[in-house]
Length: 151
Image (cartoon, rainbow, N blue to C red; front, side, top):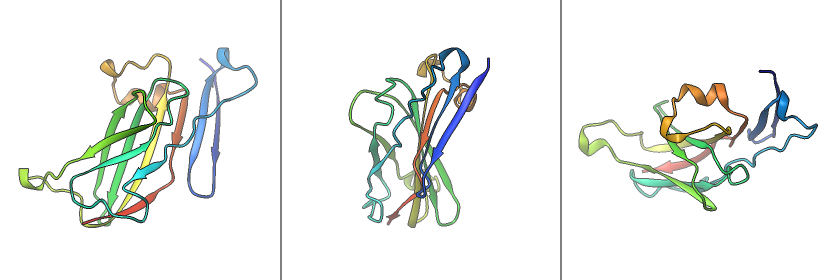
């Protein structure tokens, strides 16, 4: 099926776009708002190695979708945390301290956070295959990188 791809980017690295299906294109493309990091505040601190990342609900306009929060420490170690859409003005993903369980947590110091959102009508979170996200989405938005400190 043919799709029209459009993407807008700003100077802060935020992106929003559409992959509109030819049959759904009416001449206007409505874009998602960019997910906004609320907590830990950019430039602030997480307070501990266990914390919640809270962000604005960019998918409320489409009412369905999935989020990925990517956290990268100064050494390049990266975590991807996924969250499906739910009603509400904000969403949270929990960052556990896996050190006491024998895991290797993200390092202390600066953590770079990006938040991405994707949506498409056929999305069923219970049957999600993560390769579907890049292939099937109609709407997408991504925050530019925001940095906070993790003790």
